[in-house]
Length: 114
Image (cartoon, rainbow, N blue to C red; front, side, top):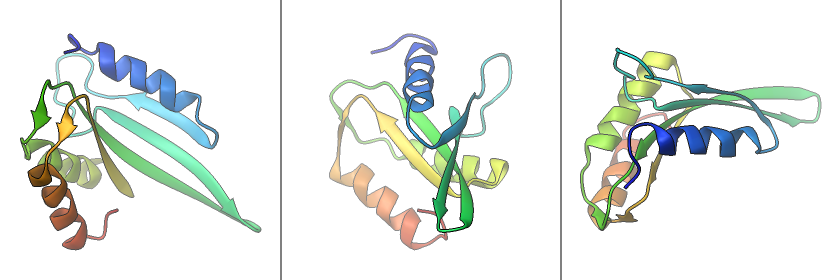
């Protein structure tokens, strides 16, 4: 288990080292809610002369054992809507459960978000 925002800070550093990542916002540090977005990662890619930017909403969960809680899925969807993200991601320290994976797939199939 990672205390406070330490895991989020660490993952922000990791994302900043990934080629194509333009910006990483560490969100929700302070007195407000993060609206389902612990990190907001802006990624640039190109195809020929076309440049694309994607805003990935990242929800970080520090759990032990197996991750069964589907609240993180709802939080990512909230973050995508609030921050106009193009994709969402859940990063957990726990082992994923079939329930979590099914929840992610169900939301993905029912929305326009990968």
